Image (cartoon, rainbow, N blue to C red; front, top):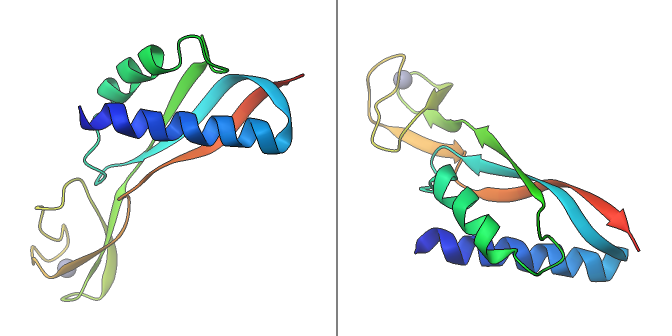
Length: 115
Ligand SMILES: [Zn+2]
């Protein structure tokens, strides 16, 4: 599953931060998921529980922050919000869009427990 490897990547980030910042446990993870990232938030949630079992984030809460898809329309020269990559410009209906945001998934913030 694609989401499974993404969650393993998140766990790597958590373990890395724990080493650098010196904390023992992660209590909450705020994760941004772009609308155009091609990621299913429910699948991420499911994988997160499985992947973090017996790690520093065991039992941690996962707070998913949806990030809207953003694009620049070359036809009306406006920044627009789109829900999918295949969607036309909501203003002019054109397809000459350049995606500018909402393509990634990233850890925005962590609530941790010091050692
Ligand atoms: Zn447009």
